[in-house]
Amino acid sequence: MIGPLFRREYLAFARSLGRGGLIRLVVIYLGLFGMYLPSSIESPDLALLPFVLFPLYMAGPVGIDTIAGERERGTLETLLSSPLALKDLLWGKFLFSVTAGSAFLFFSLLVSLGFRAFRGMAVAGPGAVIAVLFTSLSVSAFSAVTGMHVSVRARSSRAAQQWFAALSAVFFVSIGALLKLFADRIFPGLKGVIETALLNGWESRAVSGFAVLLLLATGAMLLWLSGRMRTLWKLNSFR
Image (cartoon, rainbow, N blue to C red; front, side, top):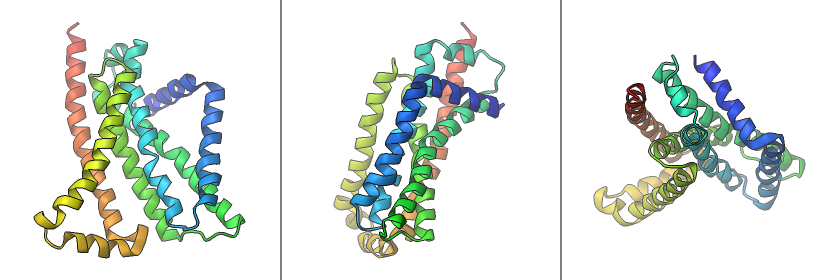
């Protein structure tokens, strides 16, 4: 049942954008990430950084729309009353959010690599590209489940978007602040270990470890979200 629900989420997403909006989204991603940024950044490794960061601002809003948007359109209660299993409902919405957050970036990454090679600029190696794809996927997954969480009790999509933006800012600022202020105090020598691990760039243990930690956090948040969605399902069944 996940397949039909995935298709339903895609059709709702396409309708919300409209044909013109979908074309503009593709053009913006290809133009900005596929051509403009690669030609503006000389370092091939640094040019890959946007492909890791920007899924955060694509998958999260899509995840918000799958719940808060459904509620605003008056279709969430109908969906909760349908014969769909709760796990299928949850996984369908989650997988679509991750796919939507990653698809544009993956395609833009291919365009970026081809554009840099066409201009005679240095291109990142296969190992770095695979590492970036894996990290980008983990960021998309974490962003999607966070967006779904904040939208469960949000009164509107706009309120959920505001909460998501605030949480994203707090997340990244707090990680940097904690590492800077407390890393050596709590775990002596941790700073040196991280610096050593980062010497290999995107293929470093620090980057892959960060991606794995995000996936583990995503799994834990999915379990939590399942409980919250089950509560909504029960409340709706008693109406």
